Length: 286
Image 1 (cartoon, rainbow, N blue to C red):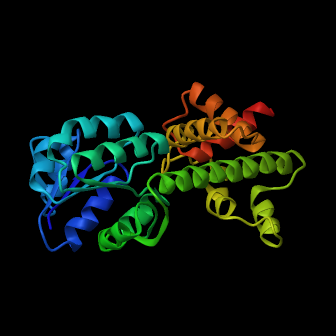
Image 2 (image 1 turned 30 degrees about the vertical axis):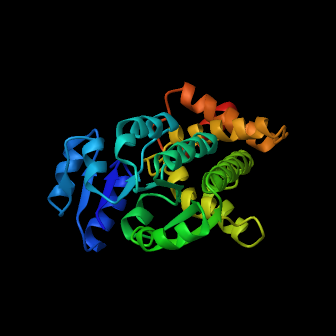
């Protein structure tokens, strides 16, 4: 069973490498950055001329690309080679776009699932990603061994699109938690409490959370090295806003988080890590 992997970005590069190392058949790779392709060829991956060429050679296609429009573009490139193929899209895109592609692939005679990932680069390297899957139950059992090459905590959320619904909910919650961390660090330091003491004191009560524990030291040192960019979170929050409007919801925490990210991106901070939102909150309260 031959696999093709399209999209060798921050996450995709390590995900593809794990498949190359673990899969006992050929693994083809492609990306707009040919230097990354060349690196994975050295690890045992096989290069192709283009995405359609890749799709013609494999049984399973995996995509890990940035935005909805990129997944749509891949579909247009490979649609003539989707009959009897399985396409696993691990990108974080609009659930409605994903369901539309699922319906198109089904008409062609192929299978399509959404399987977005959570956690960041270190988990991609160690193959301990969380993966949210949207597909029919029988198909889930078929793809699970492939997903286990890349992830550790894997859950089927329901039919197509539901994996992405969960991913957008997850990232929106992360953005709101980080925003709360940012705001309360700013308040505490205004009253003379150090970031170190703030983190320790919070750990004694119910406010302890992964994003304070993991980010406090970097916030203190103003280290905004990117593991997951503000741009990516901003994109996901934009999808969340459309989902909110679609169901006529009123979610003020989500609106507030989006406003902070919108400001950060407008200040050209988008390529930095999403914790850089602390800088936005701090500057608002100088």
